[in-house]
Structure formats: structure tokens, C-alpha cells
Amino acid sequence: MIAIVDYGLGNLRSVQCALRRVGAERIGAESIITSDADEISGADGVILPGVGAFWRAMENLRELGLTKVVLESVRNGKPLLGICLGMQLLFSESDEHGRHDGLGIIPGKVKRFVESPSLKIPHMGWNEVRHQDLSPLLIAVKDEEFFYFAHSYYVVPDEPAAVIGSTDYGLTFASVVQSGNVFGVQFHPERSGLDGLTILENFCAICA
Image (cartoon, rainbow, N blue to C red; front, side, top):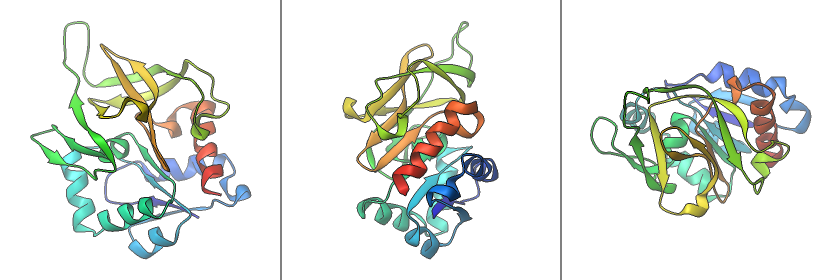
């Protein structure tokens, strides 16, 4: 079972529908949308999606009592996938609307793109992801495939080794990260066609 964490922000149904499309149930990874700590604790893997403001997301997670169970899941070796804002929440802090603490699972910061006449914010639409296929999350995903992005902030990991995929938008930023059993993608795999579904299928296989 994969727990899709419901903390009031995110395209939860789209993620669950995408998991069903890849036949997650056939590989032992049915999914549930939940804000129940016991259900998250009992799951084989956790997906933390998200769309919206970093500070609001952290506030909601704390108010629902979900930060503890997410951190315990990671400490217990459970696979976790952060999507878009969910990936940013994995990091130590964000400068969105002031400084705000994140979950601190991956050391690093979340910063805003600097807008210019040639660079519109948010970064919206399809863009390439470069990688070397060194992670089980990226199996069968070709280098320089296109994925769908919608974000104004990007992550800067303290450790360069955490970056397993990168994208250019005014600068080169981390678009896929991994630290042990924790994974993050800045794009929306559920909106990225067959390659996005492949990433979700790979995560299901990791959980199974």
C-alpha cells in the first residue's frame, strides 16, 4: 500500500489516477489518500504531493500531526516520493514569503527564480530533465526527456550527490533528487505522459 499524504494542498486524485494507470495494484502497491497517521505509518511507501505555498504546507502538516509520521517513515527506511511542492518540503528551509523550516530530510534550501525580461516566473510547461540513470526511480527513462513543470521556486541541496536529475531555466537546477530511500521530483509525473508514468511505476516497484 502506498499512502498519498493529504494535508489540504495538492493534486491528490490526479496522482492516484496515475498510479492506477500504471497498474500499481498488480505489483502490490495499491494507493490510499489519507491524513491518518496510522495509515501512513502502516503503508509500504509514501507520496508527498503538493501545490501551493511552502509555509502553508508546513503549517498544515504540523496542525494535522503528520510531520512526525513522515519523518519516522523515512527513519524506518520506507520509500518516500515528494512531488513538486512536496519535494521542496523535504529540504531544510525555504525563503518563500520569509524564512520557513521544512522537514529537514535532505539538507538544503528552497530559493526563488529571479525574473528577467527573458525569464518568466513561474516556470510553466514542458522542459528537459538530464540524468545518468543511476537511480531505480529513473529506470527506462531516457536522458533529456521532457516533463511538465509548474513552479516558482527550486531546491539547492547542500550535497551535490543528492542531485540525480537537472534542468535548465535561467540556471541549472535540481529537478530530481535522491537521498537513500527518499526521492523528489520538481515536475509533475502525473501530468508528464508516459515518462511520468514510468517514474511512478518505478516508485511502486521500489515500494513493493
